[in-house]
Length: 254
Ligand code: BTN
Image (cartoon, rainbow, N blue to C red; front, top):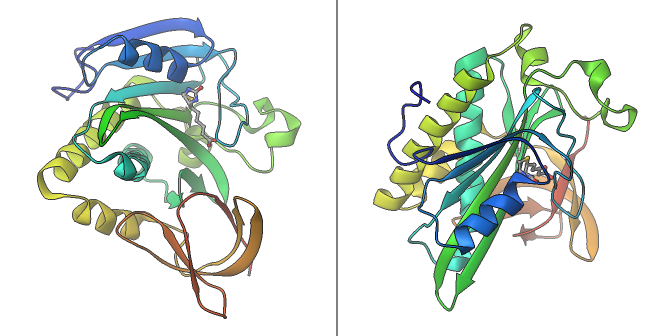
């Protein structure tokens, strides 16, 4: 704890040896009125959750399974931008600690050599035009050896240690993630999302790529050309530019 460099994030820490899902616990505490910046971390999750109703592999002591409670002064429609903030912070922190050239795959993954290092699950509660809380859940595969992943994940998941070529201190990485997140969050509060989106554009691996888009109710292909000020992905299909606010993309190998 002494090694944290933040003033708000991590001021209050709930640490668990094992828990169902840190996001569920953070949402429960947020609904009870906990302060902004509270974090929930666990050594293991028994029912870790991913996006699109998927699970999240969360073995004991091998990753950072973390949820952060924010109470941002943003419009509820801007909540997805919290995912972009987290992606920027995580990429910078991992690059700083490992020098591995990882990058952001829109909207919420950090990849290294095409495989997933980190997943982000942002959940929100809002009333009328105000956010009550946002929980940013981050699953960072830190010291998981390739053979430790279940077979179905081996082709799509990797770890920070594998990218760095050495074991990585989870505490050092956690401190860096929180420091970067606090910096990018205060930037967004003070100056709006413009500077965050600029950083995001520099750290993404999605732009300029051929992608397959899995949007609610449809799939299509195109070239990812930009993200707009809402954080939506703009995909040129050849018959015009489509805007995707929610969904998933796969980058097609060239
Ligand atoms: C995804 O890529 O689908 C998002 C994965 C998010 C996983 C993290 S681990 C900590 C937090 N608690 C959860 O149950 N999920 C998130």
